Image 1 (tube, helix red, strand yellow):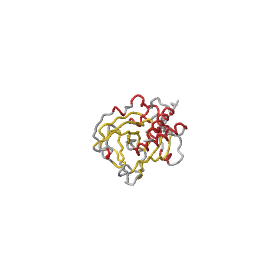
Image 2: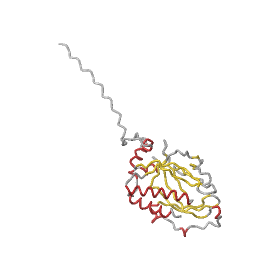
Image 3: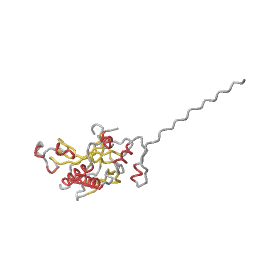
Image 4: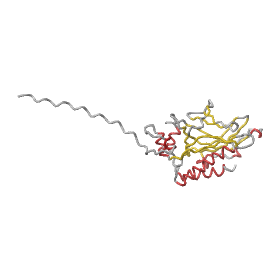
Length: 247
């Protein structure tokens, strides 16, 4: 089991209640709305083309591909862009902000910057997902554009609201894009196909459970997951009774 899918399993979660997570998500969402390494595939988004690409090979993501967002992986930070590439970044969990955050005033100056090309330090938001496929690949998605941060903060607000209401809080999403200005620039859109519970996700990720997440998302009735019954052992063949000896 990989790190993120393990993180999604209830037994491996840190001691954070839904109330704690909802509070942190709401705080970060409010602030942001104003303004492949290891075993993880990094997802990128191009605002010029509206294309999502995965991993070192930049494989284009199928618009029908589904992902499950893990709310406990939301992160924030700073990233510095120069020469069309990131040259320094700092990230931390939104749940450990008080301990791990870095003040913007302490960031290293890599100037001079070409502001017309968007160079310099920017805020970033991100989260981890599990790709709904046979391998359950880990995916990390971070963005520093204003439109990208706004899309992420909107998702955080929705998750926080559902946590506070005691509703299913894990979003199953597909990725889209929409043009938002006269220059043809596009912004990311996170379409929620369904909201599911952690138990339902655990059942989906558990290889020993026969559970159809697609049926759940499509609105079909899915029975509660249960372990596949163990194969019944065949009863041992009875030995033939010994014949009585004739007198």
